[in-house]
Image 1 (tube, rainbow, N blue to C red):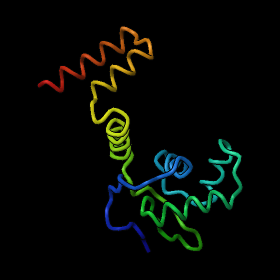
Image 2: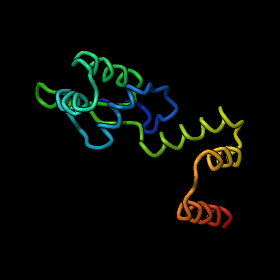
Image 3: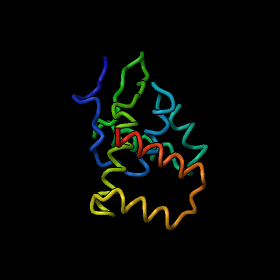
Amino acid sequence: MKSTGNNSNKASLQISDSEKLVLDVLWQQSPLTAKAIITRLQGEQDWQDKTIKTLINRLLKKQAIGFEKDGREYLYFPIVDQQIYVEEQADNFVKRMFKGSLSSFVAAFAKKEKLTRDEIKELKKILREIEK
């Protein structure tokens, strides 16, 4: 039995920072049991098992993750594609904080952070590729 939801790229979901930590684990390796997810997160977070199971259930309800039953265990896997999720979150951030102006975002970031020569080269390379 497999439960995958009805859209394999549901990146527009509202996913909390805590829920994203569960997704990060599943993006690194899946499918995993709840016990395996708990073990990995307890090394990083000071959470009770119940808290992590609650996060798993929230992600299931949001259809951000799915499961398949393997005997008595449930194996969880991400439905939300990591790259699509990251791109959408970055786009939402730029829209919210910089009124959609990517150049304003880059300018604000470049003023705050000292860019290395390599980072400047990389930005120029990206811009050249976009111009093509």
